[in-house]
Length: 150
Image 1 (spheres, rainbow, N blue to C red):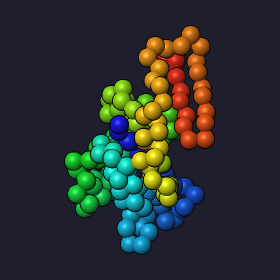
Image 2: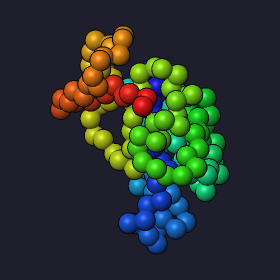
Image 3: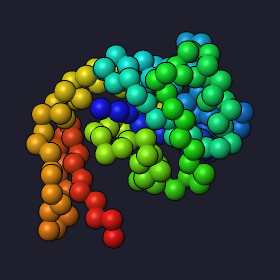
Image 4: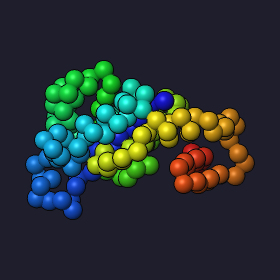
């Protein structure tokens, strides 16, 4: 399983603070918010993380990766234009490579152990052939989607 962290937003509602620093890098207790997110994912046993960022902030996130020695775990994925969550997942397709993945919003902090969600998700039966009609099944914990390429 892999993880995708979305961190390409502009943080417009937090301006002027986000004029200088991307929202996921705003410090909490002197650490960037994003380090809490990355540690939560790594502690869940997911060690391959795609970080979707804006080209404007690429260097700031590269510095974050270097500072916290995350180069072997975190790969930067550039989202040229912020067109939403589904678009971010679409541009991460080469990183995902048809594997299961955890999608995490980079400016969110979740108190719960992500290992619970990862382990329970992996117990759900997989769809091996596309259904005739699109399926959308929701539960409190999981969302499973079949997306028709058309």
